Each structure stands twice: as structure tokens, then as C-alpha cells.
Length: 424
Image (cartoon, rainbow, N blue to C red; front, side, top):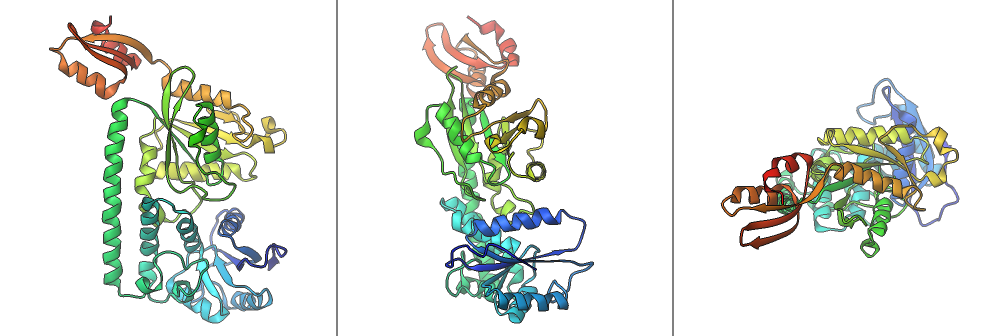
């Protein structure tokens, strides 16, 4: 049993973190991550309890001897909450609460709670509520204080006690209503995406592990594009950004692209969240380039990179070109020797602006290499060609003249050759 963070403010809820290692996994990594999640939720880590186990106990997840140790720790450390790194059943939560006398939650409930506290937009709130109900639906029988809804605190945000204590049919009906609303939001996104694709402006998505500095990077790029007044919220904590932010960036070369900031990833991201946030995560799938941001100052940054890569592949973004942006090098001594080399790896500090010019050049190369701005004259009899240009090329200027439709457009190498007969 380890004791942690004893000198933090007294108004914080005091949590004991519990991790049961049951298989060959990066256990220390996930426990450190749990501590970060607890901090992000505004909790004080009063102690940490771990155990290796060949099998889980069906009633308590942990063995009886370890349970006695947990009970003693809860009393000695005056704990308000026990947070398990493992996913618990409703029955296990009820039994553990009866034995310890304090509220018990698991990693998934903690993450869902953080999302509930951070969601700002209506879409974000709908997605979080649906994820909470999807997770809690099979656990209705057995849930105890975690669903009591009495007072404030971690594990009580969201749908609330009255809804969760009604019968399954009522909750299923509520889930159907939420899914219907989210589908409508998804359709609206499709319409917006179609309009965006019609302009031909390429899309860059910022993705990566939570708290890697994605929003700070977005603000740094906005500053370069002289749109600093459209900055997004950025803070040094997990899941600071939940709602997708979109901003247009204009470079001094008159080239323009759309920049999208996305929700951060974390290992063992609950499937209910991945499912509920599908409409948000889908924006990544339509990107021309992904900036995969990695916190270079974090000791386990390569593991974080693997986690985020895995999530990107799982949602279907594996084939999209990506640049690995190792951020926060201002916090790393001898970073040139410590960080991995590679032509698709860049090393920057979004906070100080170091090497941002190299990143902008890499974005330009990734988006606009081989593209040509040219003038075209399309006869009115070839409306099909004009339609193709409007749908597939970036039109800078269009004008109806006596001899046909005049275009100034940015073309790919392939379209430049295909439309050669119409060049003027």
C-alpha cells in the first residue's frame, strides 16, 4: 500500500487507487495513467493498492486478503472513494461498497465522468449521456452508491439516479432517443462535409494521446495563419478538449487548409465512448493529413504513440498519411539523441514556437506538393467538365464569359494533365 499526495487541498475527494494485474499487460503504465485520470477529475490520490492475481474473484474482483487490506486503508486514510483500474460488474461494485463503506467506481466510470464534466456542446453532452447509459444498462442490477446520485462527486454526473433506477425499458427508450438525436447531428455533419469538399480545401486533423498539446498546437498554427482571435481552449490536463474544433488556416503562400482538433485518446478507451463519439471521430477519416501529436516530455511517450496509433487504425484511419509531431521539446534535454528519427517525424514546441516553420513546410509538402494553379476556359457545351472542376478542384475564381466559363483553379498533377485541352 502506497500513500500519495498527502499535502493537496483538503476540499478534494480522497481516492484510493486499486489495480489488479491479471495478465501480461503494461500494468505500471496503466496505473500511472489512472493517476493522471484521477488528477484530471479533481481528486486527491490518498493511496495506491496493487495485486497480482491469476484469476479474478467473482464477488469482489480482488482476493479476500486484499479486500481486508483495502478496508483498513479506507478507514486509515479517510477515503471518500475507491477507483479500480479494472472494469467491474454492478454486483462487484455493490459488494465492494458494502464491505468498505465508501463509494466504488472503475476506470470507465471515471473517464465517463470526466467527459461529462468537460462536454460543452449539445452534441458532446448527447454523446456522453449515451455512453453513460450504454455502460450502465447491463449493470443496473447490483449498482449501489455509484448510482445513488446523492450529492455531488465523481460517478454521480450525467443521467442521475431517478433515470437509472427506472426499469430497463425506460432506459432503452432514452437511449433510442439519444441515438436518434446523434444520428441527426451526424447527418448535419455530412451536409457540412459535402459543402467543405465542394470547395476543394484540404483537411488536416490533429490527433493523438490526450494532453499531448493538440489544442496548443492548433493555437500556434492559428497564430501563424494570423487568426489568433479564433484560438481554442487549451490546458495542461487530460481531456481538456472534447468538442471538435474546426478552423481555416491561410498561409502566406495563399494556400489554405482546414484544421480540425479532436478528442484525445487514452489506453483502454471505453468502447461505449468510441461508439458514442463516432460522429466526432469520423471527421478524422475525411482528413487529407493527420498530425499525430506526441508529448515528447512524457517518459512513456512511445507507448502513448502506440495507443493513439491503435485507436486511429481501429476507427479506419490507418491509411491516411500522418506526420508524427513530437511536441514539448522545450521540456526535454538532449532531445536530438533521445527521440526517434524518421522522415515523417518532426520535433517542435508549440508553446515556444520552436521548429513551427518546419511543421508548416511539412504540411505544405503533404497537402500541396505537385498542385498547380492554372487558368481554364470550358465551353458551355461541356457542362460536365465545369461540374467536374467545381466538385473536385479548388476554384479560386469563376466567371461566365462569351466563349465559355473561365476558371482559375488549383489542380492536382492528374487533373492538370486531364484538363490540358482547356488551358489558356
